[in-house]
Length: 264
Image (cartoon, rainbow, N blue to C red; front, side, top):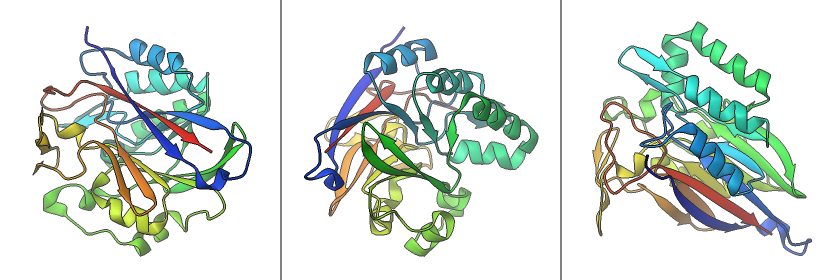
């Protein structure tokens, strides 16, 4: 059984300046695809508990929706179990969007199970949260397939984000859950203090110096393949993801659980 790599990041909260110092720890999930690569959901749940997280944020693609079938059982087990321990906020990725489009009734059943468990679902919407005395606005941005596949490609601009989710909150730390990282400059222009993304699976194959080799889109040597990026004062963390799909392969690229400490 393989291990789950932990990736820790620290992000300052400028809205906490002059206030009582505090920290909020988030576990960030991305690209589970209903199965932890070379590991399992039980081990992932234990890892989140061991890190003593205050809340969970999911940047999309918890489920697998490919080649005419979908899988949700392990995704539901994960988020429903964690929701019994701490707040869980999720936004959809392209796999959930495809499932909703093609299998609407089953998708609604999937959402109903999460709703019953207390999972907070952000479908082009925002919530305000106070965690450890720190104030957040958490927004889930969903984009349609034109923004993912090269053959459907469409550029993204700030007015489109505002049309989908409205304006950012200016009085608190703004987190944006946006599955595809390629639009980071636009997320920063919209006003996200911290964007959390995935989708690229760390480039699937990771090589020294080059980094990630190919994205699921597909695209060679994707720019925002993994790690921490910055545009002015805005930051984005791209998870290498927890699972795989279609080709069950990750080289030099184990399943990754991202831990983010937002510090005032």
